[in-house]
Structures are given as structure tokens and as C-alpha cells.
Length: 251
Image (cartoon, rainbow, N blue to C red; front, side, top):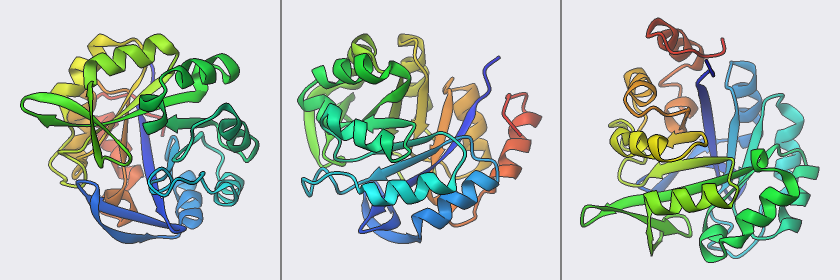
């Protein structure tokens, strides 16, 4: 049985880790390099680093920061934000990233998913999907959740898998930062539809929420930010509780 993964997410803006609710009202959550080092030491399975304003500000991800974080961690490290070319990914991998996460650029030019998986392997390509419910349908958004698109979550997930994505990071914008639990109904539907791992994001508030997303949502991994950054949930305690619920995790 594959172990379930716990993934802290470092949302970076102006060189600092930030966290908000429903993608807005951002507050400072600390130094990303120090946080990354701490998470690697206390049992996180992977790290995700998202330069959340890179696309909106039309600039590339901060390579210097990626270098610093990579030097501090010995666990898989995914980087996203402002990635739109094969050359961008090449630069990030050379700076120490293990995988890249693409979102807006994949929506604008879906062929990018094919190009990246062919050049670097599908295991390197994570497609992030930010979606919220609009008139009963999961509407995909781009540019940090600021722009709605015509795409529907489940159709888009199937398309990116077909194009070579190795994983999908699904964030429910309705749940983001609310601490009411993950969007398990949508997650269960996603995991049934595609054959690549699904990372659940948006809504973690308690240990039970993690238990639920692995059992009810069938998620392969769970990503969270503020509950870890502010010490509300300790990763070691979380993993013990997951084990108590017969969920296989790396201790």
C-alpha cells in the first residue's frame, strides 16, 4: 500500500511566507527558508513552494529563494509560480527543485503539459487546479484564483492527465483557509476519474479533516499551510493519529 503524504505549503509573497482566507487577506507566516528546514526535520513528506504573485506580477519564480530552500531540505520539493516555459523548469530543477507546479500557464497553453512531461518526465509535472463552485459546477480559475475560466474541474483534470501530468494539486477555493475540512466529495470524484495522484488542498483545520480526506476523499496526499505554520497541528502528532486510523504514513 502506498503511504499517504503530508505536505506543508509555503505561499511566498515578497520573500515571506503568507497565508490568507479564500485567496485574500494575506498575513505574514514567517521566513520560508527557516520554515522549510523545520518541516524537513519534523517529518513532512514533501514541501510545496508557491510564488503566489509571480503570475499576476508577470515575473519568474525567485530562483535565489529556491536555491536557499533546496539547500535546507532532504525531502521532495515542488515549486510553482510564474512558470511558463521548458527553460523556466530547467532553471528551477538546476536550483534544486524536484518537481514543478503549473497552473495558469497550463490553462493558457495546454501543450506546455505535454512539453514538460516529454522533456523532464511526468513525475516532475504537477498541475495545480484552483476551482470553486459556480452555479453547481466546479469552475477552474487562473492567476492565483482571480480570473474565472470556461474550464470545468473534472474535464480539465482528465485532460491534463492525458497530456502527461504526473500529479494534480486540487485546491477548493471555497474551502481555502476556512478550516472547515477538505472538499472530499469533489476529491473522491477526482480520484475515481484519473489514475494519477491527487493532492487535496484547502480547508484543513483539524486532525480529523486529514483523516477524512484520506478515507472519504480518497486523496493521495494532503496539503496545508496555516495549521502547520502557526503550530495548530504538529506533523508528528498528525501522523500518529493517521496511523491510529489505519492510514499508512511514513513516521
